[in-house]
Image (cartoon, rainbow, N blue to C red; front, side, top):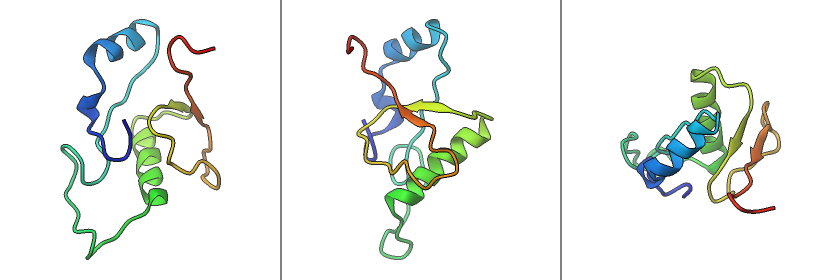
Length: 94
């Protein structure tokens, strides 16, 4: 799951388990995936930094001050006003 995966790739059962454990879960589609806008990359190119800013905008829209992130880990985490994108541990990992 990551920059090219759709939000529906997160199984409902996993989301339900996270929510029942007291977590808020926000699934969203990155640019050019799933139900997001389709962008002509040749006309309007974007970078991973742009996509990271998109993710922060989603958090801002939901008034989330800090979050754990899950995915493929390609997003830059430094240099953003909220670098509190802490990697979440995998279930069963120590």
